[in-house]
Length: 337
Image (tube, rainbow, N blue to C red; front, side):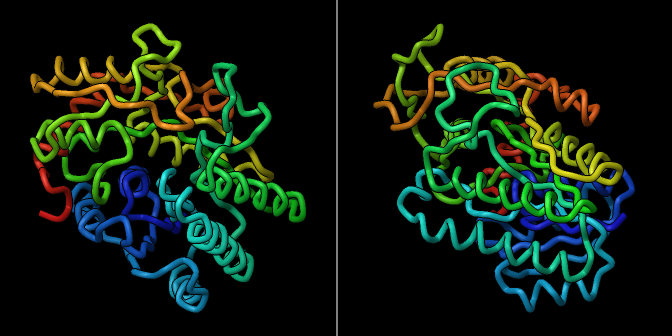
C-alpha cells in the first residue's frame, strides 16, 4: 500500500515514516518545512535504508497537491500537517483556522477527486477541553479552550460528516496525549523552533545548557506534588499506533475516534527527577506562575485502542527520557547544526 503523509518531516510524522517503511508500506511525504526540516526525511532514509519521494509544498496549494496525486499511486493518507502551538493559536486564530482547516479541506477535495477514501487524522486530546473526569474516554462530550483545539475539533467533525455522506469512506481520528522521546538511534527527534512550548524539549535544552533553567508553571495544583499530571507517550509507540490505525482503516469503513496514550499520568516534578536519575544530568528549575488553562490532571483511557486497533503503549517513562536525551545530546542544535 502507498501512503501519503502530510507533515511528513515533523516530529510524529518522521517517526511514523520509519514505522511504515519498516512494515513494508510505500510512502510519499509532503511538508512545507515551516516548523520542520528536510534533514528529518534524510535521516528517515538513513535509519530504514529505504528511499521514497518527498515534496515541498503547502497543503493549501491545490494545484501542487493535485500534481502529487497525479504522479504517485496514493491509496491512503495520514494527515499530520498543521500549526500546533496552543499559545500562538490564541494570538493568531485566523492563521490557525486558515492553515489547519483550509489545508484539510483542500486535502479532502483532492482525495475525493482521486478516489482515495482512507485517512488517519492527527487529532489531539485538546478536543476534550476542560474535562475533569479521568480517564478521558472517546465517548465523552467534547469542547475546546483555544483555537488550536477548535481546529482539531472542526476537522474531526468534517471527517465524521464525510463518512456519513460516503459509506465507502474510512477515517480514524487519533487523539494524542503528550508525545515525548525520540527514535532509539538518536537520529530523529523533537526539534521545535525557538523556545519550546512543551516540557521535554525544554528539559533537554536545559540539559545541554542551551537554556539555563526550566520554568515549572505552578506548584499548587490539586495533585500529590502540586504540579500537573499528564499522560506522556513515547513517540515511537505513537507511530506504531498510526500503523495499527492504517491497518484497521483498510478493513473497516466509517469514522472512529481513538485515544493514543499510556493510561498513566506523571507529574512535572516526577518527569524532572526521573530524567535526572536515568541520565545523570541535573535539571535546574524554578517555580513560575501558573499558565492560564492548565488543568490539574489529564490522562487517557486506552481500552478502545487495545480493543479496536490491537495496540497499546510499550515504553515506560524512563525509556522515553533516555531516548529524548540521546537525541538532544547527539543533536544539540537539532537538525540545524
